[in-house]
Amino acid sequence: MNKHKSSKVIYWLIPVISLHFSSALALPIQGVSVTTFAEYRGVSSGPATQIAGNPGTVNSTSQAGPGGGGIGTIGVSPQTPVDTFDEAIARGRAALPGTLGSYSHAGGFSPGFGAGAGPVSATTSSQSLTHWVATSTDPSVTTVAIDVLAFFDGTMATGDFAGVGPGDLSARVDAQLSAFTDGGSLYDLALHAALDGSTGLTASTGWAGSVTSGINAFGNVRQATIDYTEFFEDAFVVNIGEVFAWDVMLDTSAFATGPFELWASSDFFNTGGFDLSVNTAGITLIQVSGGSPSPVPEPGMLLLLLIGLLALRWVSRRNCLIDGLPLGLAPTTQSRCLSA
Image 1 (cartoon, one colour):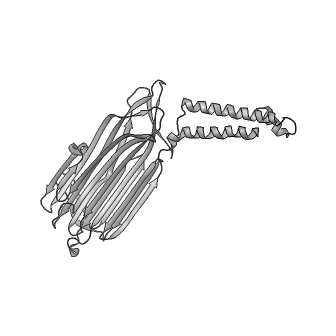
Image 2 (cartoon, one colour):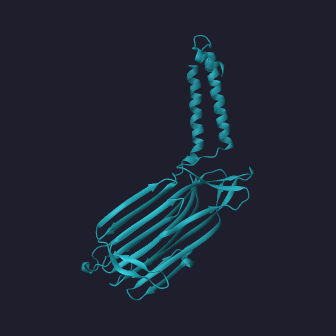
Image 3 (tube, one colour):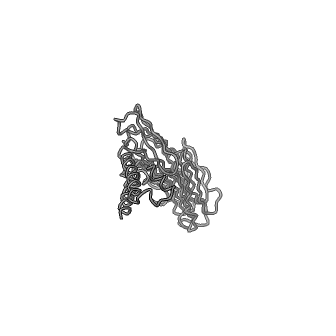
């Protein structure tokens, strides 16, 4: 009877100790992922998803259509021309450590199909998720501000010889940076730009000053190049010793209402990424390695551990006295109880 009551003390302590760690362990697992999808007149490839941990590298490609060259290599000077193909192509990459890349192409040159022969589309999503923790040499410091450096560059282009309306031909890029704990969001930055073959360019305010765009009347070619680098000082604040997640996503998409002398491309394959830093004396920002964070013990946790150890020692000695040690016990059990 007394043994049963004592064991309940042990079982009550275990969940209390475990729950104290849950705030760090509840974050999504670190790693990288890429998902690609391509469709050409009803024939699709994907969605294909590749996943790896930290460190890790993934690449994914989805292709649909006859392949081969499209209208050629076309651009709007002084921007770099882009290649066109007679197919839908989605290609992505992600690496830790490293950067993200995303590329989508849709359309081609198939006069035999005629206008409106069936849509062509491609989508690519690349993502990396890491865990970070800030430490301090000064016990009185409890929070610190984090700086963010974001950089993305690439180009979007559309072209047609058949004439299109709004929404018939488009290229798009979306980038999102976010920081969070299991308690909620700390920071969120969302940027996007879209190039429509009929209506032209739209972009979020954050990218407005980083876009070069133009139109070439021959083939109604539109092109927009983004060269974005931004430093956000004191972007968000974290608690010292609390692990937080940093999530970066880079998505591209391209759509053409058909493959008849229509094409759209969104190429952000070569560069996309971020950097986190602190500019406070005595503070160190650490990227936690491995698939899950290593929580930093807090004073309350240490107290719980001490109470648990003392309780286990008390239960061990009490059980030995109740059993009438050393009478009737094996020598090994006697030794274990006597040393408690």
